[in-house]
Image (cartoon, rainbow, N blue to C red; front, side, top):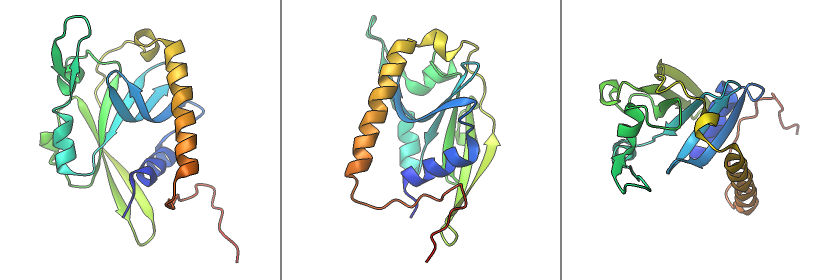
Length: 181
């Protein structure tokens, strides 16, 4: 069975250009953790939320944010849908056919994947482009110094987590390197 770390690795390897965008995984911003956060050279950001089950997908629409000044509570997707969100666009990354596309709000992009366990190949299909939620740069809405501190802390934590992992992860190498016997 495909582990989420392997899915993220496959997606990033197949779809991201590290020369043209910042690519972060499991990065906290706003009040939520972005499974994948992409920020391009122009400062436009795209959050990709991975959902591997129908219940996990449905629970994403129950997440809320509490305004620190007013104490008002807002549902995450209400904020995204009305443009009051730090990211410029938002997509779901889902197994093929898991969710009927009509059940996904129009402002959300849809990326589906198929994982062939026999060949350990994962193929991604962009079903619907994400809509631009707002035109403001991520850097206009985010404190860059705080962002850099959060990114450095996140990378350090991930380094320690990887050093401590006991299970073996299977990452397909993008460089065509094979073990020689």
